[in-house]
Image 1 (cartoon, rainbow, N blue to C red):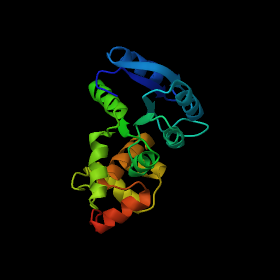
Image 2: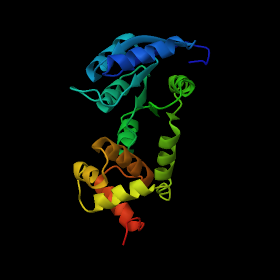
Image 3: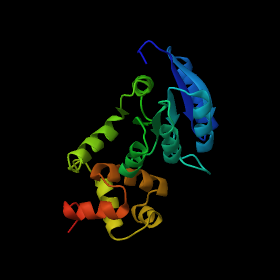
Image 4: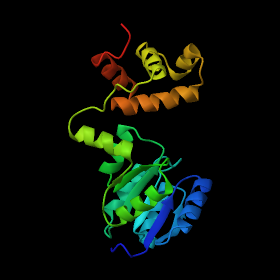
Length: 215
């Protein structure tokens, strides 16, 4: 496909409001046409086969039925060259690895600016990899066999890491630090990203290895 060709895009997200927002966003961008919407992984697979879009913009968490990773695997396994670009809020190493191994051409976070999303869709349509900067950094670090720098942990993240090492669950950590469970989950996601891990046990292991826990 050439740069001047209109990119035919299929949206897949289990939230109708998100799909409507994305459709409106792409309607403002010349050269990208939304040809369909899917609310489940099964719908995405069927519509990709029927509509033959250039790119499927795929969320990972799709509610009941097959998830985004399995839908990606099925879509990319079919002949025809349909590309899948993941657009999600989840950025753990496990999610990124599973999506890319399933055949995704790129992996973007929903926090991206519109112009970055447009560019990524066009890149995916041409078969070029598109990764959000945080994701790209961790992928490169993994390929080099190194871990991302851990010196940027905040005091609050270190507090949570310490509670994690004591074996506390999210609810108990929230009570101990007088914060909400949602805040704990947010901090845990950032801790995992900074340490290059995707499990609680992995975070504690790296923290001990790099002496990030209080003596």
